Image 1 (cartoon, rainbow, N blue to C red):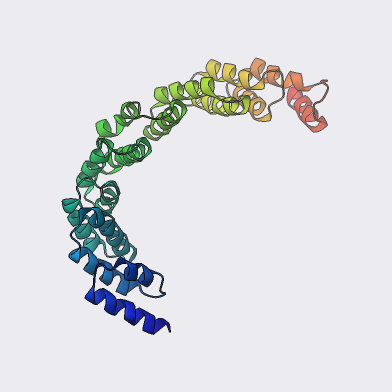
Image 2 (cartoon, rainbow, N blue to C red):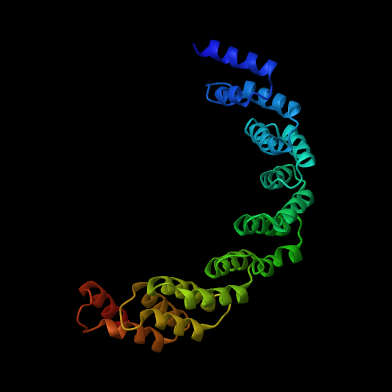
Length: 278
């Protein structure tokens, strides 16, 4: 029966706290959260091998977080990092735990160690950089730390498109419009197909027409999307620009190709005629 099995496993772990077979079996039992924290903590105290202490400390810290025991989680991850200062999982989780405990400078220090770690993969380093950027901007009010993210992304060993997309995410988060524009231009040039290129062109047009105040650039970009075919979103944006900026030539040029043209949806043509009549 379940209670008897749980009792047997608990007794085995009392006698042999690092019996991980019994510990794994206990995890599979229902309603053992409190008992499980206690048993993993006992194993953590008894363990002496560094290669086990790292993952065991991370597991215990997560269990403590799940049970809303932040103070104990902080102490556990700090001890784990004392034993295993280069453990990637412990460094990343440590940054999360310390940030939750409002120790933002200490969390940033752990993230820096991940970024500079010689054996951490580029994608993990990238995630650490984004966390560092958010910490710097939101909690540390350190714009220099946050702003350095874009340059540091270029130092990571990422695929070219992946690196540009990461730069774009960082630039958009930081409100760096010139870097956002450069990243979008690069993504358009590297796009695998017209659909992907047009998606980035629409985003670029919004940036040009908005914070960069380059209406002509936005119009030229949207016209690239239209090409020889009807593109509803691009046409709508061109008409909107024409109306808002009283550039009637832009609005008319976007609508005229939709009138008396083979293959155009009748409803689209009727809408174009109505807008031209306005």
